[in-house]
Length: 100
Image 1 (tube, rainbow, N blue to C red):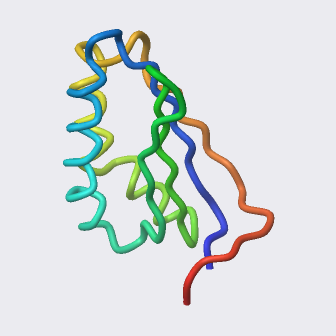
Image 2 (image 1 turned 45 degrees about the vertical axis):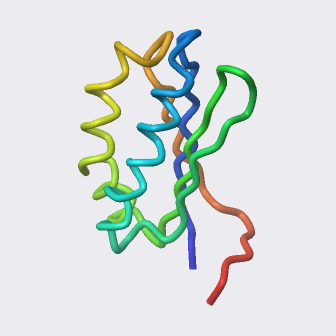
């Protein structure tokens, strides 16, 4: 059961939308290597506003994700792709419906 999550908001630089979407699509391969990341979505919320949602069963899994390959890649790409540093917001899950 998921109990914790991260919601990351990304404001993409104008003209970098295609590159950002490519980065997020490729990022899925990195997250698939994380057994503790139970749910993960990359989303477009507007023309230049994107988000990443991740859910975790416990703090250990969330901490592992925060020190994983995706966060490193996101930090490296941020200056080129995003208007400002990604806003990573941790949260507690109050209620959830997930498969299994």
